Length: 177
Image 1 (cartoon, rainbow, N blue to C red):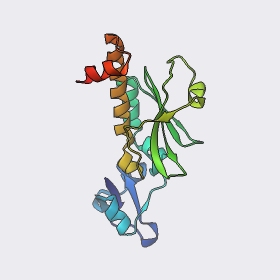
Image 2: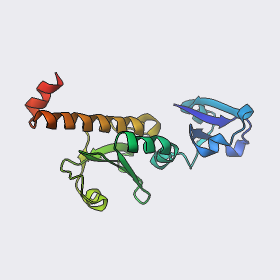
Image 3: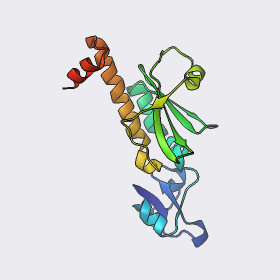
Image 4: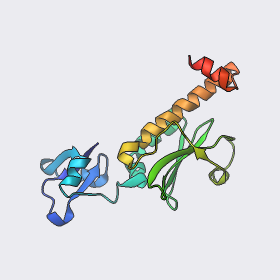
């Protein structure tokens, strides 16, 4: 993943930013460099506190999330206290968060879901791990919006299954072929 650094950064303030970070936009054009995260870290740059982590990913991708809210009928809610991103579609409810004991970002979802249920009730309900999505060490690798794309495609597939009257696993496997 490419990040933005300033070529004129003082040694004590060597910070790299994600694309879309408001602080990256403040770097003068002539001082702005785009390099890989690994190279920035090797050169002693630290992650920007504004655009780092899941909170930073939500901040830097607000426009895309707003667009998806309207185009793909997805709702996004970020809980500042738990640093968890909740995603609601017509047919499902998911959460993305950093699991501390293994220090990895994970995607969880609920099997039972009612679109009219209040957010607080949905949040308190039981989730289980989305096994087909690998856990990742850092957000640049996990790419939250790619996970959201997977969620959207699952929602579309579930709607198609319901229209065809498919409810069991063998019917779903036949439909995928």
